Length: 345
Image (cartoon, rainbow, N blue to C red; front, side, top):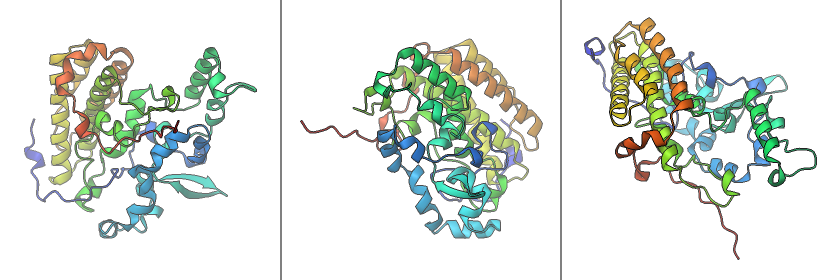
C-alpha cells in the first residue's frame, strides 16, 4: 500500500461520538426520506421489548445528550455550522426526523427506521397478522407473505445483513474530509464491526423467543456478521478514501483502515475459502489506496458492494467455521445487552 501521499500534517483529534457524521454522499440504501418516516411510536405497540432495548441505548440518548457535549459547540464553530439539530449534515446520522405540518421535525435519536428504513409504506402491512388474528396465532403462510410484502415495500429485514449493515457503516465510517480535517471529528467509530456492535446494547433477538430472552447470536450467525462486517468496512473505507484530497488526517486514517480491512479479508479467505469471498479479495487487492484516485476507488467499492451481497446471500455460517479464532469475544461487545424481565412465579 502506498501511503506516502497521505503523509499526515496534523495530529489525530476528534470527538468520540456514538455515531459518525455523514457526508453529502451518504449511501442511498441508508438514506431516510423524512416524508416517509413515521417514528418509533409506530413500532412500540408490537415490539414492546425491542423498544425497551432501544430506550437504553446511546442511539436513543443522542437526542438529548449530543448537543450538550462540550466538544460539540467548538466543532460546529470550526465548520461554520449552527445548532446541531438544525444542520442536515448532522441530522442524517445523529437523529431521526419526519415531516409534520409540512415542516421537518426531529422525532428521535437513532431509532427503528434509521436501520430498517422509513416505514410509511410498510408499517401497516408489517403489522397485519390477518383479520381478527393475533400475532401468536398468525398462520405460517400468512407470516411468510407478510414479511415478503414488507420487504418489497422497503423494509430492511434483519435477515438482509448486507443492507442492514450498510445503514450502520454509512454513519460509522465518516466519508467527509472537511468534517475531520477542519472540524476535528473522528474518521469513524474505533474498532467498529457488525458483530461486536450488534451483540451489545443494540442487540434485540427477542422476537423469536416469545419475549422471554435476548440471546447472543448463534456461532454460525456470528461468523456471518463478522465477515460481512469486514466486507462492509472495506467497501466504505474505500469510499471514504476516494474523498481524500489533502495530505492530512482524514486520508491517512481512511487509507490505513481500508488496507487493514482488506488484509483481514485475506486472512478470512485463507482460513475458510469460498469463491464468493475470493472475488471480493481480488477486487480489494487490485485497488490502489492513493490520493486523487477517486474513480478507481469508487468503482472498486461498487464492485465490492455487489460481491458482498452475493456473499451474504450464498455463504452460510457453517462454511466459515475455520474463522472462529478471529472472532472477537463478548468482552469486546459494545455495551451491555438488555435482559428481558422474567415475571415472578
